[in-house]
Length: 346
Image (cartoon, rainbow, N blue to C red; front, side, top):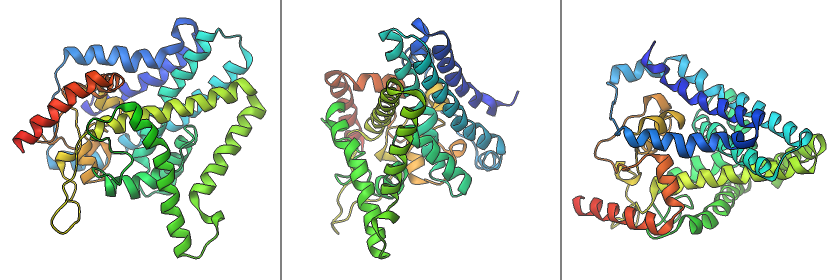
């Protein structure tokens, strides 16, 4: 079997989501167990391994349609699971634990298979890929994400102008309160500048269009599946967005771009993102953990991203780091120390 087929392991996620929806009970939290129990336990026994490809190999992988197909499959799969979940909530008697568990189960799925995959597709130019990205983000009530991310975050990352960059000493919960509305606000400003420049009405503002589509989507959920499913859809979207922002929080925590004598910020370089070579996190997040290379080459497909050994490296994988971030005293004590080490060697 080709070594590249390791990305098929990512499809364990939709399997455990389905198991939770079908069997319910203790299974209801299927994806939560996988993401925040099983993967961290496995990664604790295996050290991070840097296995960068050579340039020739990387170019061959870039041309291989297999990687695109694996990525594309996530969007219809998460839509199928989401609709199935709405039907389960609407038609089957659920305990409070099962109702909560299924929302968390699908929330992790929408964050990973929806937002994360849409993030990758949102950097591409094919119309079909853009459509899939927006379809994935619709489930998270976050269709405007690619506007702010591509135009705002990638330009201002590592500065106080970016709502997606966590400041040293800022807790995860403070960051959520700043980042979630900040992304929407910045996306609106970006679109407003464009429509004003082109002398267009608010109806041409893509953020306005996306918000309208999202409200229509929730209305359809209510019409087809009822109030309980509508509440679940809203909670699933919130969970997915908070998981997205938790990843943003750990990716750039405390890493700032310097202001040059000219008054401009220095260019983004490999030192401005936290990276991780932990194997399972890389696979399930489609190499998002090679984050420095992603920011330096935003149009590079996930399978071609490289690890920079001199870039900031997380001692733990992304799932463990996300769990640590929910405990601010532990997170700050550990990560602030890591930041000081980086500054001492800079």
